Length: 175
Image (cartoon, rainbow, N blue to C red):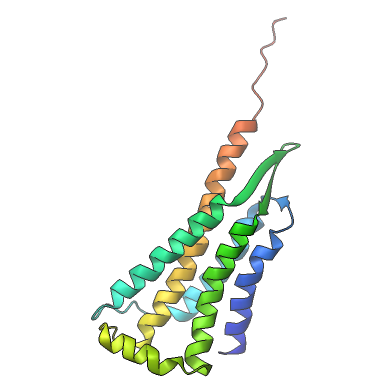
């Protein structure tokens, strides 16, 4: 793994720790993780392999990312206080985030440095996964899907929470 890969992987894992402390739900909540995965997608997604069962692998990992992202968004606490929305990642949300991002990073380390390359090559041949790029694409899209579904879930829950606390206009009876 390159230094840039380590930095982006660790940054994605650490994002959840920023939310373990309750803070305001604002644009940074959405923009920081989206910016990081956008950079990763831009850096690693040249094309999407479609031969053999490459798309099955990609879809399976994207599905896992979506499940982790939605569940993580659901298990993130959102509450209103003094007209502001506050967000705090709960233990379940943090674990799901670390499992998703950490599994991807762990797989990469295992393949590159832990002797996993032969196992992945055998699995790929047995299941008609045609290239290493299929694995790269699948894991990058898994991370992208996890981030997008998590922040999307938080965004929708935040809108619902904001709508629930909007003050009802009081009619002026003196007029």
